Amino acid sequence: MKKILCDFRFLLFLAAAAFIYIQMRLFATQSQYADRLADAIESENQCTSQLRTLIDQISLQQGQIVSLEEEKQRLEQECGQLKALVEELERKGLGRLIDKEQVPVAAVVIMACNRADYLERTVKSILKYQSSVASKFPLFVSQDGSHPAVKEKALSYDQLTYMQHLDYEPVHTDRPGELIAYYKIARHYKWALDGLFYKHNFSRVIILEDDMEIAPDFFDYFESAAALLDKDKSIMAVSSWNDNGQKQFVHDPKVLYRSDFFPGLGWMLARSTLKENHKDRQFIRPEVCRTYNFGEHGSSLGQFFKQYLEPIKLNDVLVDWKSMDLNYLIEDKYIKHFADIVKKAKPIRGTDLVLKARNIGGDVRVQYNDQPDFERIARQFGIFEEWKDGVPRTAYKGIVVFRYQIPQRIFLVGPGSLVQLGVNDS
Image (cartoon, rainbow, N blue to C red; front, side, top):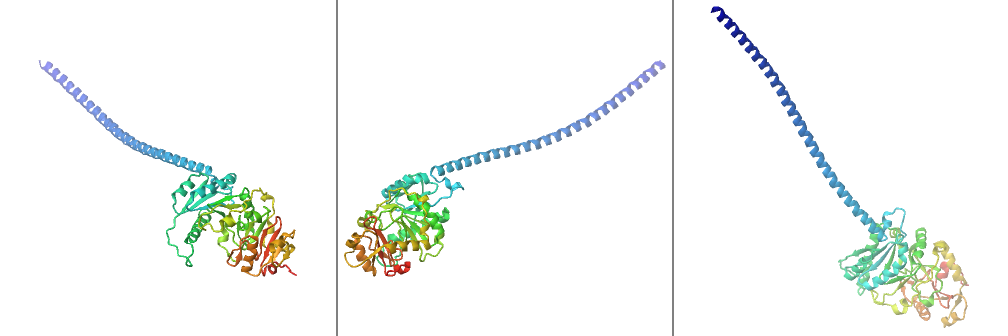
C-alpha cells in the first residue's frame, strides 16, 4: 500500500512539474507574443503617422494643383482677352502700335466739337485715301465737349481712335469783344497735341478740322514733306492749304512755297518743334490746296466763305511725290531759288495794274508801299487782302505770289522784299 502511495505521489510530482513547465513555456510564449504585438502596434502607429503625413502632403499638392489649374485658367483667359484686343487693334488699323518695325509717319487728328454731319463727311473723305496707308497715318478724332451725336458718330468707325476733351474752366479773353470760341479751340489743340505727342509718342501730327475734305495725294504729300520738316529746323510746320488757292489763282500742283504766314487748315507739326524757338520760323505750303474747307457755319461764323473758301481748288492730280526732290525748299537754297524767279518777273507800276498784267505774257511783279497800298492792289486782283501780325496772307519776305492768267504769276512785292532776296531793282 505504501508503495502504491509512493508511486502516486511520484506521478503527482511529475504532473506538477510538467504543469509548471507548461505554464512557464506558456508565459514565455505570451511574453514574446506581447512583445511582438507591441512592436506590431508601434509599427502600425508609425505607418499610420507616415500615412497621415503622406495624405497631408497629397492634400497639399492637390490644393496646389487646384490653384495651378485656376491660375492656368486665369492666364488662358487673360491671353484670350489680350489676343482679342490685339485683333481689335489690328482691325482698326492700329497694329502699328505693337509692330516695332512699322514707324508711323504722323498721326492724323480731326478736331471736332458739335457738328456730327460735318464730321461724317470729313471722315469719309479721309478714309477714302487713308485705308491703304493706315499704319503710316493712324487716324484719331478729338472731340471738344460732350455733344452726344458727335461722340456717337466718331465711335461708329472702327478705323479710328476717339479722344474726348472736357474743359470746364472759364475763359478770360485778352481783349474785350474777342470770341471765346477761339480760346477754347486753342485749349483743345494743346490738349490733343500733348496727348498724341507725349502719351501716344508720335513724332509728328497732322491736324485737320471737322469740315475738311482731302486730295488724293494728301498722304503722299505729307510723307515726302516729313523728311523736309525733320531736316530743316527753320520750318515750323508743313501745310496743305493756300489762302489764295482759288481756282483762278492756281495752276501747278507740283509747286511748293515757303511762307512767313501760318496757313493752317490742314498742317503737320513735329514734336521737336514744340521744344524749340519759334521766332522767324517759316511754313511750307502748296500752290494747289490738298484740303478743301466746306464749313460755312462754324467758329469763324462763315467769314469770307463765299468769296475765299468756297472757290478753293482741291487738287485732283496724283503727283508722284516720292520721285520729287524737295531740297530746293531748304532755307539757304530756297532764298536763291525764289530770288531767281522774282528777278525774272517784269515790273509794272501805276494804275490799271490788272490790264497791264494781262498785256504781258510772262510773270510780273508789282511794288506796294504799305498795308493799305497792298490791300488796294489785292482788291483789284481779287486775292486775300488781310494781314496778320504785319504779314500778308501767304507772304514770303513780304512777297505774295499767285497765278493770274494761267500760267502767269503775279508777285506783289513789299518795300524791303527785294533787298532781303538780294535782287537789284535797277
